[in-house]
Length: 217
Image (cartoon, rainbow, N blue to C red):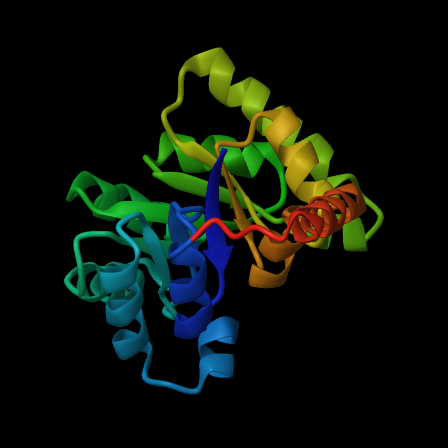
């Protein structure tokens, strides 16, 4: 499963990119607002740090506006994935932009039917929001499984990008369900590496090594 980081914080992205774990980045207007910097400047900087797809979201709500904004965003760098909402106008924009060779991430997906439409419109990625479904008492992971089955049934090339990840357990379950990508907040990515037995084992090894009085260098 590919790991995208869900943030517009360039310092966070740079630090995680140095680990070799990142395959891409997703941003949205809310994340950009938190960063407090010009949108296009942030996108360009992120695209220079990460070789994989960097999702940049349109703000227009009509197809023509989305297409115009999408073309402008795609001109920033070759690895920009234009992010459009899963509306009828968004699907129209997806069809046009993907037909022009632009990567498109269709976002705000909350049903398998919506994901089916996104794939038919030529989306590069579809982003079901599992955490927000959990928030209203539904099972976000069940949606991941349904989309995986539908896409496999018909050989759709659209990648299933699990979004609104809230916990390390979400990451594990998305991987088990066959998500192609998970976009994860920086704090959750860091939590994935943590385990008390790892810490305990390292402390024991270091204590034993200290007793030898040796150094490696």
